[in-house]
Each structure stands twice: as structure tokens, then as C-alpha cells.
Length: 282
Image 1 (cartoon, rainbow, N blue to C red):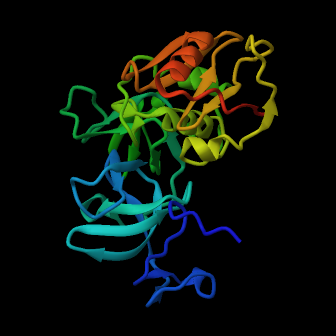
Image 2 (tube, rainbow, N blue to C red):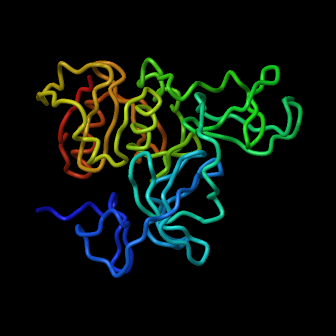
Image 3 (cartoon, rainbow, N blue to C red):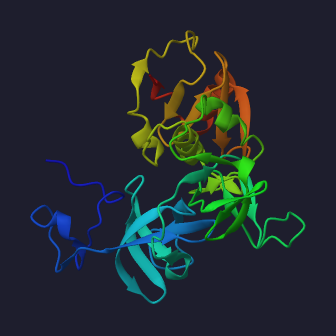
């Protein structure tokens, strides 16, 4: 039996989720408490330290089960993709009303009233979940302030084309572990784009390499379609058409479009990694 994936398993030698009793060893098991992200994004880290690497970001309104709070850090598991890590405790709050909408543009601003001339007091990235209490003119009222209503979509309304969502991030800077237009990595781009289209996806590229069905990897890289996922060990991208890969590139440090052949040759030359698999959704 393989060991549980630590990225998705809320268990440490001293503490674990009570649902894991009998499956893992830990000194203590707790049920945890539900919380929600109350800032635009919240960094999740592998250790409770500012200097620890970013493993992912949680977005405004995202639910998280917290098992421990200590020294300004909260250890828990994200509800959407199951990722486990440490979040700044100050970026968490009570769950509040259930979200009704999500932000459907790269970023939208909160205002203290329904007036765009008022000083913005925060923002929300694409995918952020908010509870709309009502409308005031062109603005939606939420617990965090007023958002431009046209920037929102009902949570159950999926984007028609996840590739078009991904294209909106072109030019966004690369950030390891990031998941917003201020910075995101290759698997973050895939995950948020699929999520906006109503498709649940795991967080990391090795997990995403199991999505959909395999497509033969031919020497001439022929037969690919828009929306195919091209996977390497440690990297993933989205085909924009039969020849062009859209990806958050650590080489360019941006979300870019490049000929797939150019990307494949560069990765093979620089890190000696051939394409691992190509996956087709649907």
C-alpha cells in the first residue's frame, strides 16, 4: 500500500484530522474548525514561517478546515482541492454566508459604497467567491464591500471555454505556487482555468497529468487539439491550437504562448525531460 500523499493528508506525528484515525499514526486527532479566506489571496506554506516556500494560494471566500492555530499560523486543509499547509491566521475568518457568485475577470475592486470614484479598499482575483446580498445600481453588495456586478458570475455558471479563461492571463508574471493575475505557476494556471469552466482539478502538475484520457505523443507532435494538456515531469501547459502551447513559463517568467515544438525542444535540451503525457478532457 502506498503512503498517503502529504500534500493532501492533514496528518503530522503530533496531530491529525480525526477522519484519519485508524489510517495514520498521530499523538492526537482533532475535528478541526471551518474557516474562510478573508483577503484577496492567502499564501499557503509548507512550514509556519514567512521564509518557507509558497506551495499554493487560497482565494477570497475559499473554505478551509483548520486543525491548529499557533504563533500566528493556522494549519489546515483547503476544501476545494484538499491541499494541506500553513496559512497566516490573520487572513482567516468565520465562514459567513455561503458564496453565491465568483469573480469572472482577472481582478475586481471593492468599494465602500456603490461608486467607482470612492477609494477602493481591497480587491478580489478571478475565482474569488463572494456572497451577494443585493444590487445597488451597477454594483453588487457583499460583506467585503461593493463590487462591479458585471465582473461577477453565479457560482454555478461555468465559463464555456477554459482555454479562453487561460488566455486572459497572458503576460501575467510567473510565481511558484501563485494562483492569481499577480503571479501564478503552470499548474495554478491550469487549475484556475478549469475551475472557472466548472471542472475540478488537483493543484500540482503531476496530479493534473492524470486528468482526462491519454493522447499519443508522436515524434512530429501531430494530432493535438485546442484544450489538450501537455505534461512534463514538473511542468504542464494548455494547447491553444494544434501547434501552440499556452503556459506559465519559468523560462520567460510570464504566461506566454509558444510553438509546442520550441518548448519541447528547450525542455529536453535544458533539463533532459521529454513530454511525459498529453491528456484530452471530455
